[in-house]
Figure 1 (tube, each protein chain N blue to C red):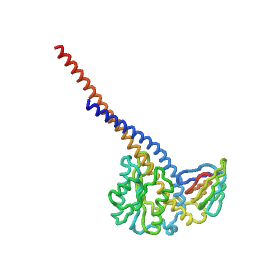
Figure 2: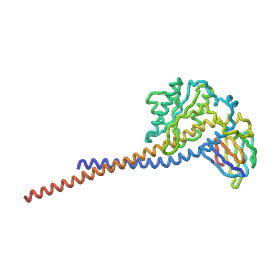
Figure 3: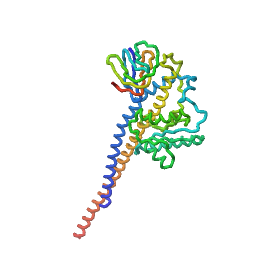
Figure 4: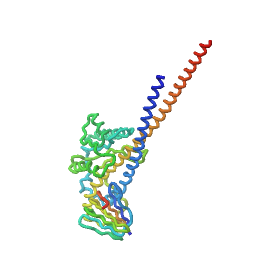
Length: 287
Length: 82
């Protein structure tokens, strides 16, 4: 039964692997639930901020705010790529890295110098492997990104943008449309796209002035865009891991069926052969 | 009654009715009652008080208050229930 014992070993390892992938699937499912709750919880703030900025915004004010400055030509841009710290989530990180590479290629094709800022061990690993300089590499942002994390990522970039050192900031992240749709996405967060005013806008009493309010709110708006990118990517990572681990669990099940069938067939063949030998032997003795 | 919501980037901390709101504006406290004129004001740092059936207190810092049609939105970068 040499073959049988080998099959028993393979059945056991497959069972163990399935146990692990099933656990990871369940962990990812519960983390994803909480992460997607955070995506939903972040929406009212973003909406309120967008509403107020668009109701205060007008073209005269726009020229006075450095964050709204539309550079005549992009010479140097920063690209912030958000990836996961961990793998085993299917093509999630690969898709993000590919999106970032395409965007970098497109920008460089236009003659823009691109600084890479990367969040997540997977993205950092890739760019280190291909030997590209990464200006900022962060691995300290976990499953629960905070507004403070977002501020620490983007505040330096905002300062560079205001001083004119860079002309644009792009963020590559995953959109969390639904559990099954989490496409990678490139978003330009700076210069701030002038929000469109819906309708005529109300006459607000403004304290202290529209200008001061915008000075206060525009950085919040940019930080919030990055915060949303972080939260959505975290949720998308868990969704991707869940899908990947679910199919791994299913595949392990299929493999187990096949292995068990093969094992049983081998065992039966063995027994049949032994009986045939005994019967043959007995017949020979009687003969 | 006023419709009041208190939102931070991470969560909506309060959403409901209140009879009045006292917010720490950049230059001192501002009180908001029913039928207040539309207003947007920058927040400073301090305690936000929402008075109603169940009075609520929050520590807020930065952000703004928007009042329009008896709807009060307190949008702040940092908010913790006090």
